[in-house]
Image 1: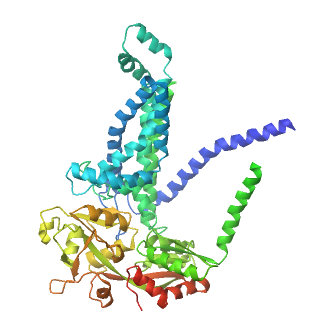
Image 2: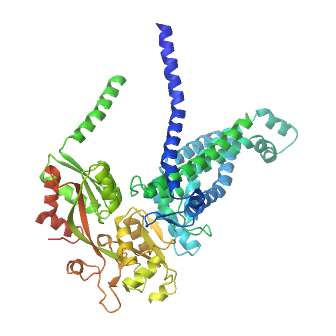
Length: 287
Length: 282
């Protein structure tokens, strides 16, 4: 009887473990089934590198180059802002902060992760947009830069907690060795700890970026959503995610527009898959 | 104890869904322009019929119509006519969209109160929104770049504006919104941006006009009078950009759906239309 119970529990846990992979495969197959249908009417090259996105015209123009560049620009901006701050924050928490402060900081960063993106988007709309508009003397504050700043806040929690973990798990002996050789605290951090934890920090950065590129609500609210190829970070952009979110409601099921949105989903899936695999490779290299 | 409460919660979930299938409630979905109106109707209606429930949600005319087609709502609110494609699709799924006109709406074109421009022709509007006119000085304003604000493509307002202003009602027209137009997710977002931005121009239903935006008087062509977006001007047909608002149902309205639509068309219902800044049809 007892053995039987064990057996059942083991099987159940096995099923749970398999389920997540199973669901990912199902989602991917569904995306492929719906998304590839768009290529009956438009060749992949024109879809990926077309410069015009007018999905509800007759005939629709479905070129997603402006959307891809929009997503990349916002992500790049967010990475430039969040990586230095995030890594520095992780170093401070892992190495320098006194114990009490460390606990407070960690809790604060976890709290930052708990803010829903629509709230961040709303705060950005009310506070950040006028600020960006006035400082850079722009016709409007709805720009890629506004999106990048807001998304940097969203990437930071992931980045800081994983990077801090990586720094913390560098063997104590490295640090002691460096001190014994007469290195200062800063020299130890810069020359010993950071290189030793570099693959973990890289993984942290990758996962943070993965979060940014998939983010929808905040970017939809503050980047302006104009489907033009952006010439500067101070111009409005339309991202892949915002396009799906804004248009899925309207798309007539079974139309080219509908399939095109799923094809955008495939593009996003591939991008985040690549980012996640890179992050994973970095983590494994460390071990 | 924990198990027991879990059972209760789960059974509640199931029972809820059976209640929803029960026909003393209806789902109304669609046009963001009409959400306030629909909400006002539903509230008044429920006050008088306490046993019946109306759930009103927005999302855009297209969203409403596609829910009607997929059978997830009973009434779709729409600020544009249903498209051929949608009718075909509905027929395939055994749904028969039936149109009831319930109100009129004037589309206001708004600018920031600091902007000296206060009147434009439809031709000038088409020029601005298609990107041919890029500076305010070309239409009599300051030397400032024009920031075009539009609704997202799931909005009936977006489609109506494109067909009747950009293409001037020509069904074979090829004009599109300028690619540099900022597409904002709601009428309120446009109202906020116009209120803060002296070089912005946007459009939305008359109901959203407040003191922070300045509605522009519009003329059909250069020879016509410039007309302000106001209820009396929509009623007498002088204001050039006004449109009908519809409720779509599956077949002729019946039962509860019919009762609700009759209420919308009643004297009381049409008074609510006027109160929410739309134009009654009766």
